[in-house]
Image 1 (cartoon, rainbow, N blue to C red):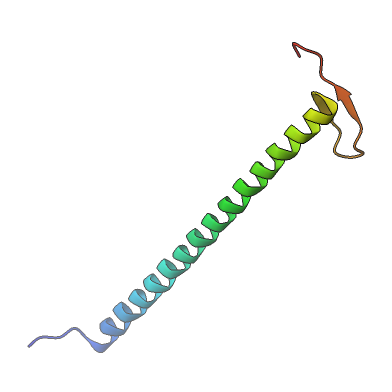
Image 2 (image 1 turned 135 degrees about the horizontal axis):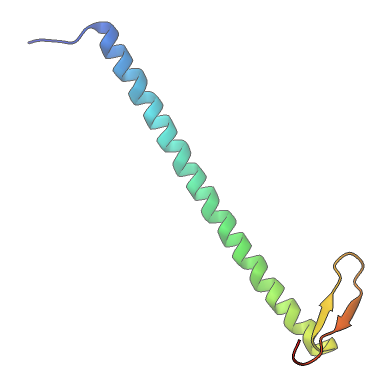
Length: 77
């Protein structure tokens, strides 16, 4: 039976090990990305509910997030 050299075998093993490690890290990043997108979706949903509550209380307004002041939105704007 023929074999590659020990050096060639070690090179292939090293490359395979690096490939597996990178693949695992990509999987971890994708899982984290999924979690973050889910959290973002939750925040957007909460923000929509808050907007509805504020519109029910104040009408349609533009709010300055630096100080909480607001101006009424005229119909057609």
